[in-house]
Amino acid sequence: MVALLEMNFCGICGAAVELRCPSDDNRQRHICVACGMVHYQNPKMVICALPEWQGSILLCRRAIEPRYGLWTVPGGFMENGESTAAAAIRETLEEANARIEIHDLYTMYSLPYINQVHFMFRARLLDLDFSPGQESLEVKLFAETDIPWDEIAFRPVKLSLEHYFADRRTAHFPFHMGDLFPPKRS
Image: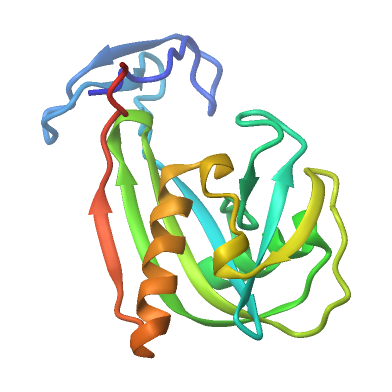
């Protein structure tokens, strides 16, 4: 289980907080000693697109940490006030300057050890006018045989790509989901 992020002060009134279990809860929460505000910490949602163009997939080489220099699909943290589909469209535009049409939610992986849930949408590139955004070193379309499998940055992305190419062979794209745990160290 991942520990709560350290918090010292209430984001509402600025008073000190203490870690305790509210009477109507079963977990410890940061609670303000002055106003009583309970500060919940919930998993982050990572929203990605799997942009396809005539059988190839658009990948981005990361220009930021974590996993600098490795390949991934366009994606990132969902912002407050946006839908999951809007997040996938925004992230694709920010990372690859690419416009997409969302098809369907394709994969969902829970990573409880880092408090994240990764969602991947199947999408169609609307045109070939794409280029690296600020968070990408390069962007490129890859056929299945050309995917740099050993250089994929994140396990949910690699699993989603594997599912995609297997499902494409049957022309049936069911929803895939699972829980991922810390990789075993050798």
